[in-house]
Image 1: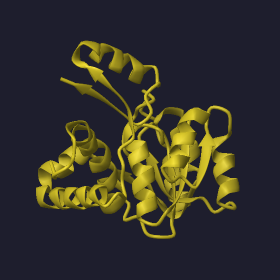
Image 2: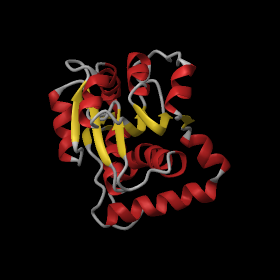
Image 3: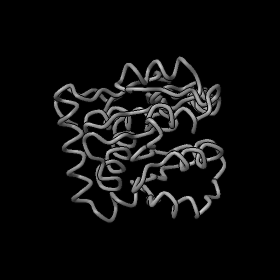
Image 4: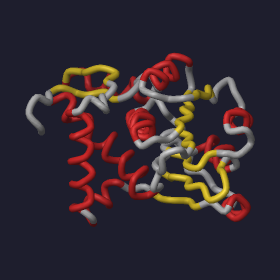
Length: 217
């Protein structure tokens, strides 16, 4: 922990920023001027991806399930937003990108959102498979990967940290530098006592958590 960082912040930054920075830096090689779609953008890793994408010079489209969640995404830098409970994800991306599609899709959600998002990729895009928060691991039509000339890229931060510790440590030095400089700020949904840990889990399961929830022991 760097001087001046509190324990709640320190406890919450590793998985969110660690996962998302590895995804965007090493796996997607996100470039300034590219367009990125973030699914589940109001979750912990999603909001981290929104912030890091902007910091890396991308145009960020944040997709989430409510206006309250999208409002936080805009506060943290999202250029455009999509409510995928009320809007057609694929059609909205088409409008926002003038039919071109997105260069990078950050997907920690899976389930019914994966196929329309994959259909929204630009030529030579990179589709980041981060997780399956929606519950269902999707079956991906391989012909779409061919037609889009895009890459499906797996993101497993834990394995990256174990197998490439030097690179992972370098990422964290950069992340902590961004935090010290005020360029990144972890969005906390709230803190819970250890006795209320079950409520924290229920709030997550009921999709009430925006950003990161922290249990304080």
